[in-house]
Amino acid sequence: MQIQAEQIVAFGQKLERRCYEIPTPKGTEVVVRITASGVCHSDVHVQDGYFDLGGGKKANFGAGLTLPLTAGHEIAGEVISLGPDAKGASIGDRRIVYPWIGCGTCKRCTTDEELLCGNKRSLGIRADGGFADHVIIPHPKYLVPYDGLTDTQACTLACSGITALSALKKLPKMTSEDRLLIIGAGGVGLSAIGFASSVTQAKVVVADITEEKRTAAIAAGASDAVDSADPNVKDRIKQLAPEGFFGVVDFVGSEATMKFGVDNLGRGGTLVLVGLFGGTYPLALPGFSGRMITIRGSFVGTLAELHEAAKLLAKKPKSGVPVTTRPMAEANAALDDLRAGRAVGRIVLVP
Ligand SMILES: [Zn+2]
Ligand SMILES: [Zn+2]
Image (tube, rainbow, N blue to C red; front, side, top):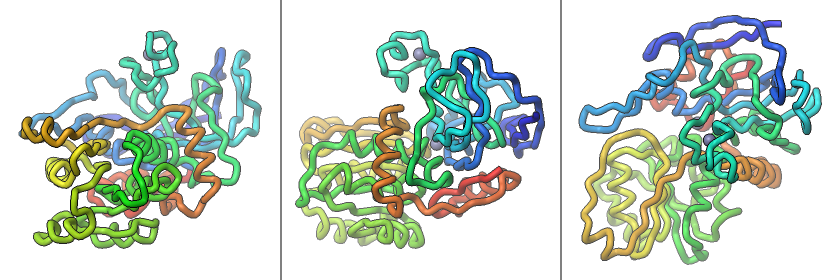
């Protein structure tokens, strides 16, 4: 049997369809037949081979990658074969694949902090991922059940879902009097709006420069949505959060959104920076200590958070990200739409 994959063969170029033999799984390996594969903005960066650091600087991470590479890290599918030592999985199991896989041997990996591993073998970034009809997983522990959810909903939890949940869990405890500001109502922002009521009592205000995305945010449960590029946005924020927001999550991570987030952070508030759009941000130091603010980064989420996200979403499946499915053969067009900011919700490719 063969794997058919849409692969990166050169950075900055279109993906190419390539076929190769499915290897017989060794040791603890598992082969999953992919039924749904979400497209994430990070896939655009992987395709480009760099992140923009602002001021014309780029972080090239392509040097450590071996091409061709199958991108895609939001995978759901069915177990079709198991290595001799792959215990805890069975043929026919339908599972989400946790893609943020560590080296397995370092101090972080052996103390249950795999996400902090400095030598990860993440699927779709360091190892072949989901833009294909099959994928090889190193161990069954990375397979997460998703009872009560469809394949297309479930796959989005592997990145956008846990990214949203993990960021929300890093916020301070808030009451129903507090307002939480979510910047960016793309796939991850919408997912965060869906999870917010399970994690915090605070009402959610969304900031996005696109009207279509603000409308989607209100439909997903946000109490208010503001246009952060509107010259009168200050007055609007004054009404919504007169003392600033106690919690802010920036799912865009651009110079403009970071400034907007920090400017509107209340005394003692926490800003969680998630988005990887790129740039640099100059911080007025006296304001940082004087306002007693916390700025912390958050990247994807843990395996435990993926189990939690699947259970939370199964309780309210309608709160998931709106999903558009497209055939796997349209992987290039899907990446182009994401790069151009044309996608509302999540695009899921189906082999
Ligand atoms: Zn992602
Ligand atoms: Zn490690």
